Length: 394
Ligand SMILES: *Cc1c(COP(=O)(O)O)cnc(C)c1O
Image (cartoon, rainbow, N blue to C red):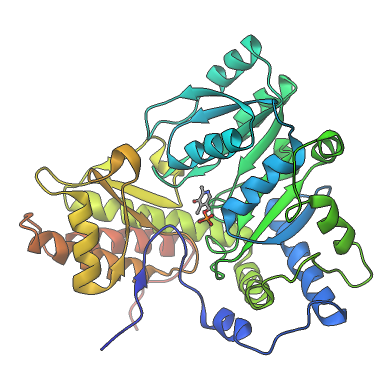
């Protein structure tokens, strides 16, 4: 029987039935009161998620990378210097995007899995001032949550714009656009919010708008001025035909998300992350990357001696239909990654860990059956008692 794949990858994440139904319902025509109300609702929710009262939030039809490209096109000009602290695949994407747009790219290179140090960024900026610092909040390739709050502070102190990829962190781990002094933050629909892929969103500060006025970069489809003009119509719209169905789904996803609230979602992500980390360690596997206690989006796990990590991700998929992510770049074959942000509950994690145990056993790794599942249960029970869920028997 051909069953749906079980997603435990860092995006796209599983989509709740309510969201599937909403995006399968008849289209709301994209110019007029119905769509206007939908845009308002989604934009207001996203502002809450970004924790901003001041920023504009614009929605664009593209994957997350389109949102990143729009940031470069709208606030920078060819020849501008930017600084990219490089610590994984997605910070590398910033350098590629920047180079494609003829920016002068300075980098600070870290070994993958390291946290970026704000002192290094401050020192680099003191030596060579730049127009913008391009940051990656959740470096999905390594699982590391970068200290954006501190990094934003040193960048601002040096007079640079702070542009952050929050595609895999927004809604998953704490983030505060206004308080942290961020200028542009780019998110996507298919990660912590568990909507379908297809929408990118950007939060834009006053300083970023001022830079936009002076920017001479070529742009058309992603011209923020057009999005802003249409968003300010009596019935807000997109300049072009948007992914209406995805937007209908995203609205439902945001309503579900806010039933628990941002803090509830954060606690759940912390718990699920703890369960995965305890679980794989109970199998004797080693975790990868710095700052593990803060890394609630994705867990990178070193493959055991003698087993290629890609074999683990291939086999768990072919035998159990579970999709986890292989290592990227220099981590290919060395680590595999489990995503645990978005629409997951305890039993989704238990199911994934059980599949991992059986996969490892089949690959000849000595597994104590049930060890990962037991460790995860321990984490869940601890959280339940902390939240006042009783364990008494009747
Ligand atoms: C998923 C992801 C993206 C966006 O990728 P798309 O495939 O373009 O949606 C960007 N940055 C990070 C950190 C991501 O995890």
